[in-house]
Amino acid sequence: MNLGVSLEELGILLVEPSNMQRKLILDQLSQQGISTLEGVASAREALMRMRSFVPDLIITSLYLPDADAHQLFALMEDDPRLSGVARMVVSSEQKVENLESVRQAGVLALLPKPFDRKDLQRALATTLAYLTHEEVDLSLYDVTSLRVLVVDDSKMARKYLQRVLAQTGIEQMDEAENGAEAIECLRANAYDLVVTDYNMPVMDGEALVSFIRESTDYAHLPVLMVTSEDESRLASVKQAGVSAICDKPFEVDEVRRLLVSILEPDA
Image 1 (cartoon, rainbow, N blue to C red):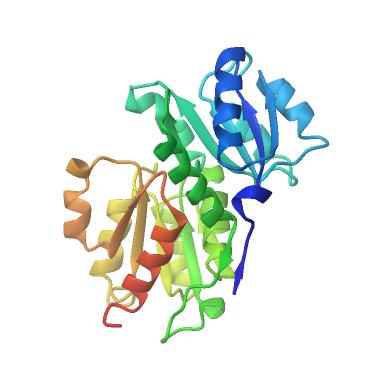
Image 2 (cartoon, rainbow, N blue to C red):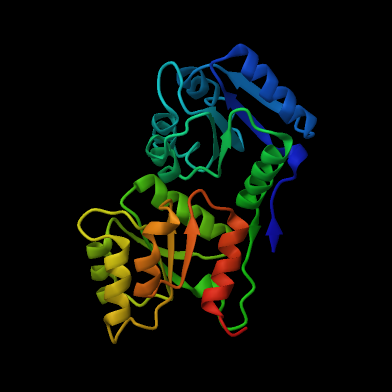
């Protein structure tokens, strides 16, 4: 089943402090055939506008006059009407550490500033995939009966991952804040898949993968790691036995593909 919106039906709210940049980006979005567009200059204006207009997608600059993008997303997460709004960030920021908080907040795309038409088209395609409910086609499983454990120390990241997994047809999900909590969940319940972050306090994703692979009870369990870590730091995780790794931010279609590859590796 494929239930989603078309590009022309998207409602977008742009949050950009610069009048010139705001007009430029709105024009670029309009050229993609999007007609439901709103533009504001600050986080406060965005929250006020969303009292009456709940967009499908919010595109915001990383730094705003009264907040940064992560803080805006946190305020949205506290509002049930806004927590599911797709998120995208536009920034000229080059320091990886300054982008980590928005990666963890579940952005669909990080667009460079300035970005070109292909960057925008790719990001909008990712948005449509996120908004489309399309069940993963599995021959060995009924996707709605799969039980998945989502592990991440960020509440926003956990909720985002659960929304993405729900769009693939998965309905039964539990969550844990770190590897130690995940182990308690594993001991109390039976799961078909673990989706985990890498960097977490108490017990990180690598230690969790090692525990699972060294346990006779859980060694068979597929583990998908979703992380923003660079490739050089993930060699030991791969050696520990992770089933697949997905970068943050990730494309929803890539998650669908990875689910098929790790749940039905011989299909």
